[in-house]
Length: 225
Image (cartoon, rainbow, N blue to C red):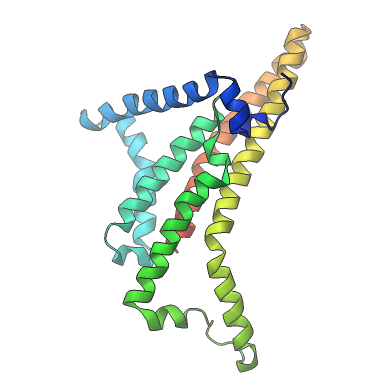
């Protein structure tokens, strides 16, 4: 069966090759098995490195208005850790990239956004409605500004979900293209291009891992604003 560079994002194609779902669950179980015992061991550099991004997200969440909502900070920290690990799983070759699909990102962004809107309308209706009108604007612009702010607030979870899925998809497509050319040069026994492409792909993979962390951070941070 012939496939293209977008086949890794197709669940139907992934189900044909049975190794892809198996690898996804295997990598998740291995990751949890490696990380979970570290939190019960004596403090070390490994536990400090694992807790650093979590503490960074926690401190950033407490700087926003979400600190007044009980449990929301812990929810955002857990969501950030889940998004980061899921993005990491998608970088592994032959593993189905879940975070590149809108159904995954929207299933987290939409409920959190709806919960924040309902909570703000229930406990501070006047402040919530007043935030739709920027201060200092001319009176004749007020109806248009209210309409624009309302539409912007409504589409926020959709734009956040699209941003995360699009950035993850773009990175995986580039990695796939590099892997195809690297395999071709290796099979043709062209060692100089093979070594050159291998170094480029190794560097881009490290860059993509950083993008996975940053995109998960931006997704959770913009939800908390």
